[in-house]
Image 1 (cartoon, rainbow, N blue to C red):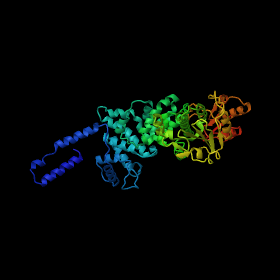
Image 2 (tube, rainbow, N blue to C red):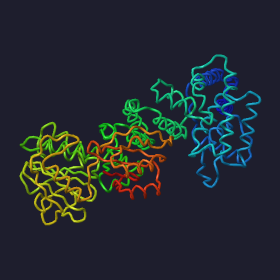
Image 3 (cartoon, rainbow, N blue to C red):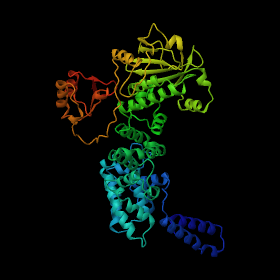
Image 4 (cartoon, rainbow, N blue to C red):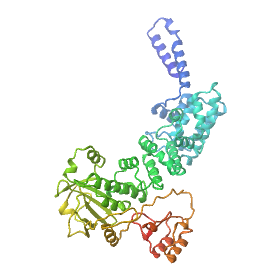
Length: 560
């Protein structure tokens, strides 16, 4: 009979005696209640999940321990559950797992149960609860916690030996055996990444693992590190699954998004927007093009990764502008082609829509406005069919208009007569201000026969004028994934000898450096060098050889 039922029996018996009832009542030893209690205990032992006791019960036992009072078996179990509990009544008191004065007493109590083979499953579950509930980034730095881990690993075999038939919960514990070792989380993370069916929900219940446990952090750290072991196609197959994890595990959402975006940046696909990844990043971290949000992005990813997403948004905006918002005319493929060449350098884009685009109830327009909420402005002062596109490249804002026959206007940032993030802009006062613009260029002569490596007509004049502003076209460079652990130098064979004296010097400079070299000069592009680690000496030499730094991409340099 449990202590609670025994006490209840005594109180009832005392009450009956006080009322001078028939002595027959006093002889009733509550066999039915005792039998029910025994049955409940058996059910409890068979249960997959053992519920944690209320905090009040745990704290009461902890206080009795600190007062050196003798504890019952049940109170000791409450102590085992409360090793990581803070007592709000004594805020300056350390938790038992960090208390050098009282933890040795707990240690002795556990050892006695292990040595005498009397550790019960409920006691073992209580120790597990404290083990996983310990709130420290590096729990292994606490020697008491490490002692507890050893007791739990040993205690499992004591509990198992006392049970005749193997239970399903035992199979789960033995499969995930590493949770009680310094390699905790390895089995689970590998299983998750492989997409294998798992018993994770059962493990949570059996081992008393709370959502706030250090174990989940360990699992996700190991899991995300394994993304570097996947080749690009394998990684692509995992992206939607990773986004599902980010939606499910809010606590680790930023870690998952950081690892996924960074791995995507190092893949051959980085210049191709991944729609679901882009939408998730915008939902969680907002628009990286806005100055107010850039610091938020830089908390999680490098500038290069943020620039990748800004490039995706620029391509999306350009495509929408020249195709969906073309007004009554045909798509101006030449202008779309030309500006897409610079999308990977655009730090900001903004579509400014006229009345027709705002009021159009077509499904394409409704979807476009919904998906770009907060990223659109209203155009005033022109025709209802007019729309404008603002693009920032380096220190200049370029403005194109949807209607044919309009020139392109460029403004130096700081001298522009408008704030590109304004919700309303006037076509004549703000966007077509000839007195403030740095460059105004018509789209003549007609561009025909252009392709990825060859431009014609007005495009040639535009390239000349942009070069005067310090802006050059840089070909998009699909980059093979580089193992972060590797430190192999760049292959000098990547550099084609066009200027013998200079290119040979570049070869000698990079051959012992850890960097990525891309040479697209034979296709009309540039030679670029991306250093994997800062190196002042090499960077000074690159500048001496005529290289220019790439804006907003640290340690990347280009030359024609």
